[in-house]
Length: 355
Length: 58
Image (cartoon, rainbow over all chains, first blue to last red):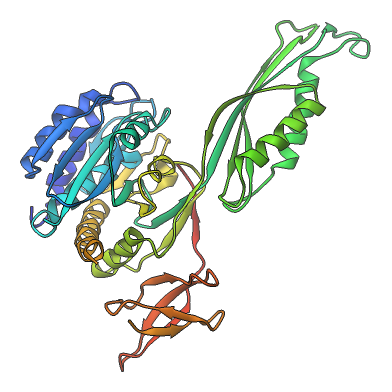
């Protein structure tokens, strides 16, 4: 494909969005992607053991362009108004993934010294199972690009995440005489208040906390005997999860609350000197865009895929503020610009990989 | 490869021959994030890059 037609690109995205794919139903995209990638000249299209879709061409150092096929649950009407495509996953992240497919296709004739693999991963929104499987099965990758909505910024860092469940229990009592009873909810709230004041960061460089679930009580006049909460901490690479867990456990012990660890995702931060970051910067400049470096407050498959290579960055079209909202929409022009930058980036990687 | 001065610590920074104006480099010695400028005479120099911005989201 030499030039990209706006309406043609929009219709490709509409096809991808019309297949509603919350985690577990990504298979609905396999046939559509085979059709699109086959038509664009990819040499090999296949589905791996967990349902990741892989389209590739070329031989040599492997470059993986990874996106994800799943979206958060919640159907949205799919539409195209000549500029914007709307629908669940338009921003996060079928739009960015389609830009990766198109960018790889545009570079096809110029990068025969690389093996370019476009990977549509499963369950990014759930547990990262697709990315974990890729890390376990791919022998080696020289560079990885992660397709997420960065507004064409180059994301070199994502924070880490700790998710825990907290439980408290107490003997209970009558609400008419709380001073002689004991409330599990009171214990939990004391713990949560101190938790919130200890991790009250306000940006990327600080530890931030959120209480995402809280449940307790079963009768209006009864002091609760049980309370349960889910907690989430986000932290940059200047902190370790061991230090934070130690702090959390000491706090829980002080308030006689039990903690259960649900998930730890390590932070990731790559260097401006990483080859793929340099290639993206040069790709932006070649495409007439001033490069912009960003750090992301959340997590993505980049936190997992960094195990493949330190030459990794996230990049894509779309406004991340629209992700996970009912207003997901993406500009087709921005998607085409992203594809041009990705094509230029792959060409830059030929030179960088060859040195 | 041209060797330029780091505007932050004064140390040496090696820049590839094919570097483009607007490219970023991280100085290994002091960790500064630098941007390459090339003037009308083709002279290269480094300046401190704009602060990396923060972006919400997963």
